[in-house]
Every structure is written in C-alpha cells, then in structure tokens.
Image (cartoon, rainbow, N blue to C red):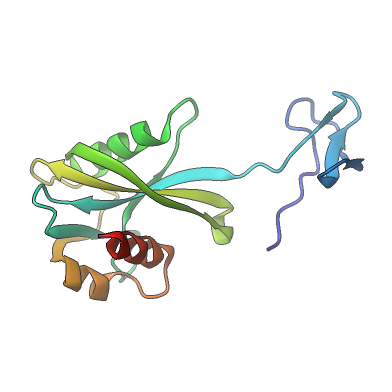
Length: 164
C-alpha cells in the first residue's frame, strides 16, 4: 500500500524532513515545530440502511453512475462517526435513524479514506436530496445481487450479512 507523503508541516508550513522515530521508522518531521507529523487521511462513514422490520436494504445510485451502492458521507470536523451517520441519512434521504451498530472499518486507498461502516434501521418517508440519482429497497438476497460488484460497499454488506 502506498501512502501519500506529507511535504509541509500542517501547523507552520515548514518543509518536512524524514527523521527516525524509534518503533515507527522514518517519519516526516518539522524542525520548526520540533514535532513528527504523521500522515493525514480522510474519514467517512458508510451505512447499510434497513427498514424497521430489517427485511429490506436501501441501496442508492449517485453521480450519474449506473451501480447501486451504500449511503456514505465524510465526517465533518468536530463530529463523531455516529453523528455523521444520522446527519448523512437525514440530509440525503430525509430519514430518521432508530438503531445504529458498528459493522467494520477499512482503508480505501483510492480516496485516502478510512471508511467506518454501520448498519442502521430507519423510519420515515424517503425524500432524497440532489445527491441521490436513484434509490430502491431490496430484499436481503436481491441486495446481494444489486450492490456494485467488487466494491467496498459490497465487502461491507457481505460482511454484515455473514454475521446475521
């Protein structure tokens, strides 16, 4: 796995040098702040959205792409993961989260993002915002077939369903 190397200090802007840190190896170091600077990455949540009976899973399409995926969104500064889950589902679908449980996490290299996946149940009437191109409720078996093949969304969904 390749990580994007930090070049400048995020606090003062000084060019970083690689210094050896016991137990960590060579880490970017700011000589001005006299501190090691560890890699920065994004953090986001994705959600397996279920109806209150837990017999249907909501999948969405976004950004003019043809595949069904899970609802997801980035964590805002100062926000916890659970708060992000509730906010994203409210903003994108106008639904209220009634239960929430952590499923698993995985690093997604393409966007340098740590993805935190949750399974949630929701209530309310779907009223999608402009970010959602299409959506549908699927039975559990149909959701397995409809989710984007080979995607992180598929990995999260299958891992969750294996636990049931």
